[in-house]
Image (tube, rainbow, N blue to C red):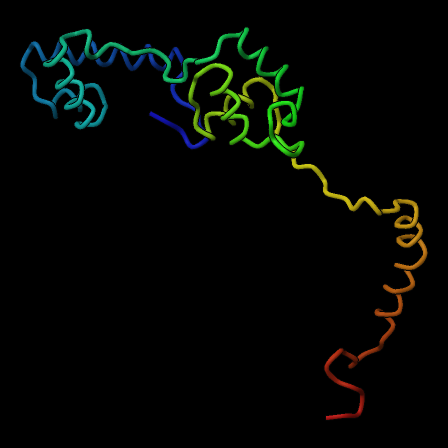
Length: 179
């Protein structure tokens, strides 16, 4: 069961779900119908069908929980190394600019640890370890911040005030008295 926020069942939720599956196994052995089991356990018939098939093929072990689907594929030491490498920057790893993208980080993880992540999985990994999404502000090299501040304080109020005082009936499309 997955949720829109990208989460899943907690360990406690998985344990509850496993107890339901084991109750279903006891009912399978008693030859109860899928619809009867579904109604008694308050689950869907499709879930009961899936559990019965797993029980038939693998026995009771087939319906036991497989654990968290999001088991980390990188150890704590590998995560620490990844963070050190990210701090070195993309240039140190052969890219031509100083922007880390998820695709680049995914590639770096593959190169360093021989582990494959999806782009979304890379983002989840980074988010879990305190990284945030940031986009660098692009500024012209020639930009003069002092001149911009002077313009905003002195010129912009005059420009804005002259537009407001144009008077009623005035717009860019019509002139007073002309039709």
